[in-house]
Length: 638
Image (cartoon, rainbow, N blue to C red; front, side, top):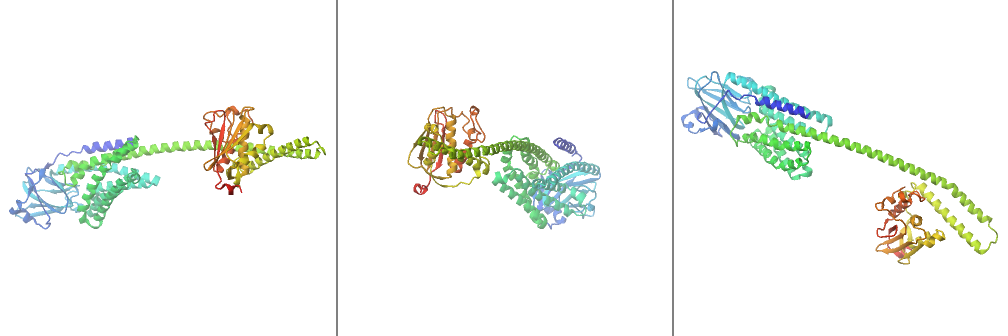
């Protein structure tokens, strides 16, 4: 697409640039003079009288350049070196009312009216610009100019050269508007395919620019409305205002002005309001066009200059599409400034500016389209990459879910298989009580009773674990409702220690900073947390080394810490050990499923606490638990 647009643009510029401008003769200051007046009722007899001739001023380079206004200008043209079958042409083609006055042999004046407000059937030849046939001899003629835009250049032609030049200009305009029609159709196709508002704005903007240019160059009157010239003039002014409004709307969206540059966005709103005023004046108050059009043109120059910093920031993104879009605005401004200044009357009328001004829209629009194409290609590539990443993430999530399901199934199977030996142990323990001797010695009875109680506590804990695994997501306590009640963490610690055998109890060294450590929580879950941490220390600490448990208060929290003398945790694994089903390589020869620490942290978080490693313990592993202290000690432990 980019190559096709570039090739087509180059062809248009080359062929359009080849249109010859030779063959006509211009007027010098000696041969051309002008008199302008607000009185539109002056007649030719008064203007041609000797007393009025002193009011005429030499016309610089034979060109009228007064911008927009409601004055009536009289041109006095002295014809010399008249070619055979001469024609007088006045450009540009949008001059509204022109009246040519030629002296008749009897001393009277012949008047012929022409201009963009006259139908094509009133023209001697169907030409783009206003043209009059002249008598083939030297003479002085007067031209009355009544037009909104008072910029004009008279040119003297021979009939053959004028017709040839008109045909060349039609070819040039055909190429230009064929190219612009291609741009319009591309924007229309983009809107119909995507149904996005920004493409609708672009379609409207390019269409309005094409309509304005088509009417300005006289093509609308010549080809579309030959007998309704007022409609062609309306297309000119309405197209200008609509192009400004839709262009502001589109570029404000494209450059994201409302979000990133609110001040510039407000200026664009003012420019759009000026365009709307031009449309309203064209429809309901044509007299006001002399004021609304200059305001609109000045706004285009000033506001577009103020937008250049935005384009510079867009250029610095280092994306080829963004850079071409950033180049569009300064390119459009640079190519159109001469034509804008000419229409405003700040520079003398130049036919080459008028001729090539219509080409000024083509390079910027081409840059815009190529930039948009490259941006869309980049966005499509990013979309495909995002879809690929999403697919990869979905596949990874599926694999992780399958792994979790397998782990959950394994845990369910283990829970199911534990149920039978637990029942056998429970039945055997009850049978042992029944089969005991009637009167054993007191020491033997005490030992047996102690062992039976230990077996019962172990059974109770295994049954509690199975219940949690079955009812709350297999070791996931996130949905297990907390049964909060006042507790004493120190008392929970002592009860958890009592459930260990005597040899294990002797290894623990309990230190407390007070008689009570009050908190609120679920005693079963907190007991499970403490037992997991104790069993973890017994499992990994070096044999016969002490295990320290400290319980103390710190501000509004209770700190529970257990420290052992073991291999510790390898650097970088401090968080990995709390993940579900995660076991470190150096502990793979120890029994376990990798659930204890994960479950302990989940219980701590549920109680508004934190569980982590103490990095300052130098001998092995030290787990530190922070839990919120009860608000009122006495009430909490009542």
